[in-house]
Length: 143
Image (tube, rainbow, N blue to C red):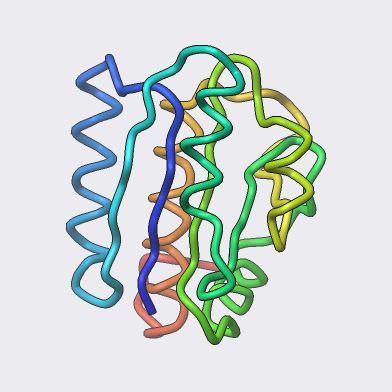
């Protein structure tokens, strides 16, 4: 399995970037992971760049406050039940277009609150690491 994360906007805060890099390093020991940043701009341009990453060869997951919420264990089961590569979409300040939400295979929410894209990326990478840890039975995740 491979995971691609499409993020609208770049990470400006070094504290976020450092933590994200650590989680990616840890996850990469088990799952190939790639982050692609799309420059925030005109909504139609952003949508076009995002659509280029939606394919029948992969499962598209749109992160949105309207999505389904999981516990960490449920997210781990979701992750490992997929039979194709995963592409996660994190929106910018304007969120996701209706087309991106509709073309995605899944809508997932980490909170009913809106999160800045930097924080959403950090939460996603941490939850990916936690999902791997749960699958491996490590002591990182405690119930």
